[in-house]
Length: 229
Image 1: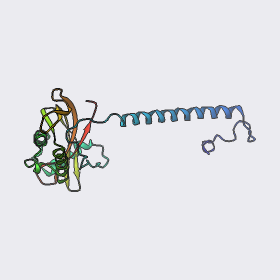
Image 2: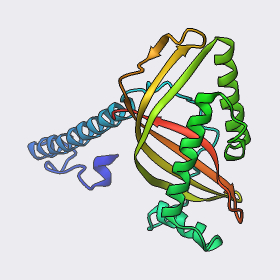
Image 3: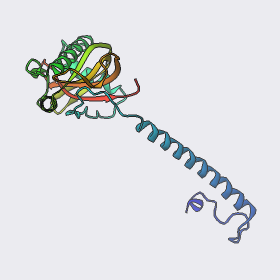
Image 4: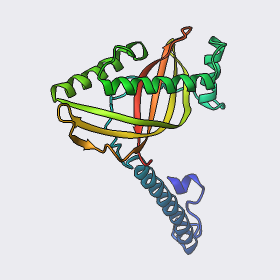
C-alpha cells in the first residue's frame, strides 16, 4: 500500500515484473525506515532513562502532594508568565519578589513547627489536606518515641517555576534549593537513629501554594522533591 500510494508500483518491466530498479528503490526506502526506527528507539530510551533517574532520600516530612499544579491551556506565552499575569490582573498588589519573601518565611515556619511537633502556630498556613498529612506523620513519630530534627536550615535559592489559576484558585509553585542538618533521634536518649547531626544535606523541594481568587493569604497545598543536588 505504501509503495502504490507513492506511485512506485509496476515500474521497471512494464508487465508487473520485478526489476533491478524496483529492488534498488525498495532498498533505499527500507534504509530510510530503518534510520527513522533507530532514531525513535534511541529517543525513547533516553526519555525512559531520564524519567527513571534516582529517588529522593531526604527524610524530612514527605507528604504526597495534596495539590498538583493543573496544566494550562496551550499558549505561545510561557505558562508561568501567563499564570502570573492572570494573578496580577486579580490582585494589583501582587509581585514576584514579595511572594518569594513570603514563601521563604512560610518555609522556615513550617520546618520549625515540624521539628517542634506542634502545628498550632502554622495551621493557617496549611491547606486542610496538608495539615492532616503533617499531623498524621507527627503522631506516628510520637508513638514510635522518635523526633525528626531539622537544624541549621539555609535557603540558597527560591524560584517561581509555575503559576496560574484553576477552578477559582490561584496557585504558585516555588522551587527551594537549600541545605540543613536532617536526622531522626530517640525521643528520650537523643541518640541518632538515622541521618546525621553533623553532615548537612542539600536538597530541592517544590512547594505549591494556593488561595481562592480574590483572597490575599496563601497556604501550602503540596510538596514534591527532587534528587541529584
